Length: 263
Ligand SMILES: Nc1ncnc2c1ncn2[C@@H]1O[C@H](COP(=O)(O)OP(=O)(O)OP(=O)(O)O)[C@@H](O)[C@H]1O
Image 1: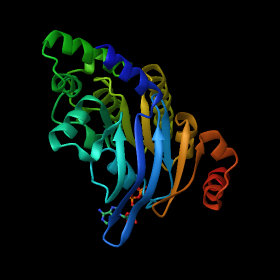
Image 2 (image 1 turned 90 degrees about the vertical axis):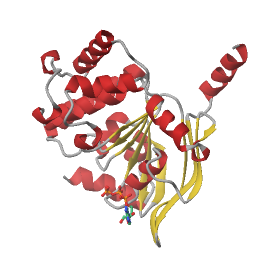
Image 3 (image 1 turned 180 degrees about the horizontal axis):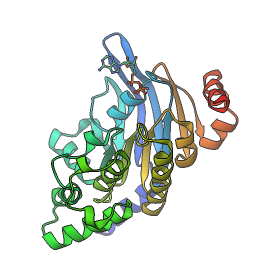
Image 4 (image 1 turned 180 degrees about the vertical axis):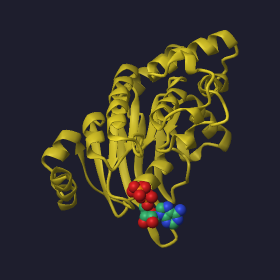
């Protein structure tokens, strides 16, 4: 037991996720190439770049949705690429979460809002119906969905509500690492701003470690501690978010930043 505690405290100073030389090809085409970074507990890493730069490919390799062709990936010191399918699924259920851009990809549309949140709790062992419903109600409140909507299906919700429900479904099991793919994309600007505020509060309150992909620099400015800029599958610049955005070194990052300023 003491040894386990020692191991855990040693891990607190170690990276949660460690990525080395990750590459993924689609035939001869580069999806992403030679990406390396460490993500520490409680840290938010933003990945930005134009369409086709490799953000989604990288995120799906990190989250275990596709297998990289080369490179290493370890989580809490465990070699993720060496896990069996069953072990990987357990990790995805217990420690990781994935927020899709389109809430329909991350929700079960035929199941009530409460059921969408509750079934995640059941997947990690919760059995007491009353407690599951109470926790689901609490989480609906945290994402600003009225408790009276608990039995409604997501199809009766607005896009912003659906996205907030997807976030509740993902965070209810207290994951340590959350992958987010354009979580505010496809929403009205005013809805985006509110959702972003909500996400920022949750990330801070829960001390989440996050890898977030977006093409929106305002999203990373608000959420990300660090930033990686991708172009044609490669990371062309990386650093603290404010540093990269206020003083971009690479010509492509300068272009990204200045094109936002001109809008
Ligand atoms: N399933 C696939 N088959 C073949 N090539 C693919 C596939 N998915 C992505 N690619 C290619 O890999 C490269 C990176 O694409 P990716 O979707 O990762 O970029 P992205 O930055 O996420 O773009 P977007 O912001 O538009 O989603 C592109 O050249 C793309 O054409």
